[in-house]
Length: 169
Image (cartoon, rainbow, N blue to C red; front, side, top):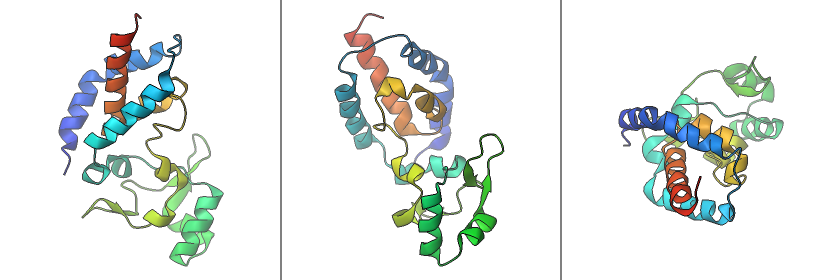
């Protein structure tokens, strides 16, 4: 299993520096960033095993879409209302449909696998969203996930190193 307490301590210690780095992207243009982002993302996944961690499922909640509700309720053989009443709620801050509790009710804590993996929410299937958009267009998401996801933490560190070596800030 992944040492989450060591990760959290390291992320907390380096978070100010990495957040400052991310915020610079709002003001700087870095050419050829997307190919480098994709290359570094592949490197990250050689180093990180999600099943050894599952911190996202333990500490965060996905946002559910109407299509997610339909797909998951059908898979479970219950109505969308039953799914919502038993497991979900409306986030009062933004109106999103989210889990009532963490860790996620679908997380099997014995092996860190998702009990509804085949029909999991779209938000889960794309997490941590490293290749959803070009790096500099998704800084706010990386900043939010910096201390939640070791893969995001590693990607930001690798991007920081590349930028510092390749460009004058």
